[in-house]
Amino acid sequence: MVTTSDGESINQMMDFVKNKKPDPYKYDGGSAILDRLLVVYGVETRPQLASCIGVSTGTMSTWQTRKSTPYEMLIRVSLATNARLEFLCFGEKPVFNDEPVIIEKTPLVEFKTLESGYLSEPSTIRIDEEILTTYQLKKESCLAIKSGTKTHFIDIDETEVFKGVFLFNVNKHYQIGEFKTLPDGKIYLIEDGDKYPVDLNETTIKGKVVATLDTSK
View (tube, helix red, strand yellow):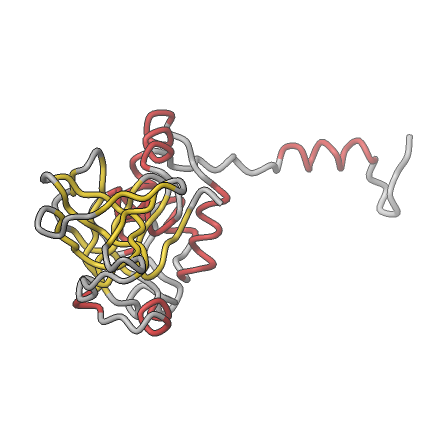
C-alpha cells in the first residue's frame, strides 16, 4: 500500500476528495435568462433584444422552449456590459459589477421591424454612439429597421434621391431598395442589374440607409 509522509494511504485521500465534491450548480435557462438579458440591455421586447445581442428571435424561442442556457452568450454579454454572471445565470443582484459599460451611455433610437411590406409598431433600441458620430446622424432622426438578418440605420431627414439605398413606400407597402438618378434625369429603382422607373407621385421616400448591420456574417 502506498502511503504519504503522514502515514495516510493514497486510497484514503482519494476517498476523502470524492466525498468532498461540491453539488453541481443548477443553472437557470429559458425565459429566466431572456428576462435578465432584457434588464441588462434596458429594452422591453425580444425583437429589440435580438438586435442588441445579434441573434434571431427564432434562436431565442429555441432557448425558451428547450429551457437551455446560452453559456457563451452570457459570458460575452458580461464582458461587453459589465453585467455580473451571478445575475445572468442565477438572478443574484446587483445586476452590474460597478457601472454598466455601455447600457446607460448609449443613445436610444426608434426601432421597427419590416416584414412582408409592413412596419411594426415603433419601439426603441440602444445603439453605439459611434454610429451616430460616424454617419452624422441625430438620434431624433435615426430610425433602425430590422429586416431578416439585417438592421438598417436610416436618416429620415434624407429624402432627396440622387444615389443610394432608401426606405420607401409604394402601394401602402414598405421596401428597402437602391435608387439612382441617371443622365436622363429620371430616378430608377435598381434590382439585380435591372432598372425600373420610379414615379415619385406614387412612391414616398421615407429616408436614406446610412449603415447596415448584418448578423448573418
